[in-house]
Amino acid sequence: MKVVKFGGSSLANGAQFQKVINIIKADPARKIIITSAPGKRFADDFKVTDLLIKYAKQYLTQKNYQPVVKEIWARYQEIATYFKITPAALQPLKQQLFDLLKNNYRNSDFLIAAFKAQGEKLSAELLALILQQEKLPARFLDPQNIKFMVTDSANDAQILPQTYHNLYKWHQTDQLLIFPGFYGITKKGDIATFSRGGSDITGAIWARGVQADLYENFTDVNAIYAADPHIVNNPCAIKVMTYRELRELSYAGFSVFHDEALIPAIQGQIPINVKNTNYPELPGTKIVPAKNFLAQNIVTGVASSNHFAALYLHKYLLNKELGFTLKLLQIFYKFKISYEHMPSGIDDLTVIFDKRQFTAAIQQNMCDEIKKVLKPDYLEWIDDYAIIMVVGEGMRNKIGAMRSITAPLAKKKVAIHMINQGASRISIMLGTKKADAPIAVKQIYQQFFN
Ligand SMILES: Nc1ncnc2c1ncn2[C@@H]1O[C@H](COP(=O)(O)OP(=O)(O)O)[C@@H](O)[C@H]1O
Ligand SMILES: N[C@@H](CC(=O)OP(=O)(O)O)C(=O)O
Image (cartoon, rainbow, N blue to C red; front, side, top):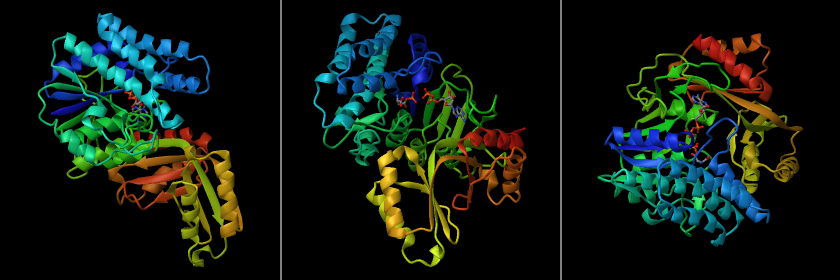
């Protein structure tokens, strides 16, 4: 059996829905279908998820939300009209969207989560209606009814282990199950979403839960490329890569596949195939376990990401000071801040964070407390920070890899603020200024792929 996820670009309008239906019909093994909310139809268009967030915020701030809710419904109406779905069949879907404001929510975070999740729910219900109209044995599954349980974090939930047990019941279904991506239900009964792009995670959870033979992830590119096509023109397509290669590259900027979605796939050892809805006959990219994987190149891909900040601390004899790092981590814990990396020297330490966790106040208070408790000789908050990740199973123990990465950067006068190699044997991480990140990606790509 295959679990198949269609991204927002694959469900953006009626014509895209038709391609999805053709793909479902083409292979009877495609039994469990995960939907995203309709995405952009053209470059300046809006994703339905973003419109739903606007709807929630306008409602919360008592602004006029009528235009945006009409705009959202128009997206579904357009698809329904394409397939000649009757107004009577459509009415319950429309009602849910308008009724969102009538429900009770624990707080504004859970309200936003519930509004946001409605995009994938309406896509799934509409797809089920269309497939039923085509006489296919399709059935919409509600996360509430089947107990797709997640943690209590409104907009950044994690799956609860009991969900895998609840999903296994469906492993031999002879129906076509249509399930909304991106969200689940907390123990208290609220809707909570994964982080943005999280329908990929739902698909991976289902694939592990029913022990699928394959997790197909349909998107709008022919393959995962060796570099982000927004940065490098016409990058090479990757035919096969390992889970951990993609995990590291997704973490550092390959937005085509959510980095957290790799974890259920790895746990269940489910192979993944990323494919293009517009050209389903193409092979796409296969993502497989490292066992028996033979690397074709030294480097598989190079990614960059800008949402980082760094805290640099200098204190003489830091290496001898008992409990220095312990106290530092206790301060992060107090401010509910997780850190990403912590490269260190004898008298220096840099801590790299995902800066989306910070407000100006948290940043200020945390730095003040660090100064008070740890008394560093020097503390600097570095906001202009990007991470470049060069990844490849072929890099393991490869002599000269570091020189091949840094030499082309020197040519373009890109300064490297940090190099981290060691913990992961298949990647090298570099810190640069944000403006240098695309130059660095292009240079490293040229070095290994041209
Ligand atoms: N290395 C990469 N390979 C392929 N696509 C990438 C890469 N890095 C970023 N992308 C972007 O990811 C997009 C697909 O992801 P996403 O927009 O989430 O699709 P979907 O709507 O199918 O969920 C592509 O259109 C491409 O612009
Ligand atoms: N619709 C959600 C979840 C998602 O995964 O979307 P997409 O498949 O379009 O990346 C979002 O925009 O975040």
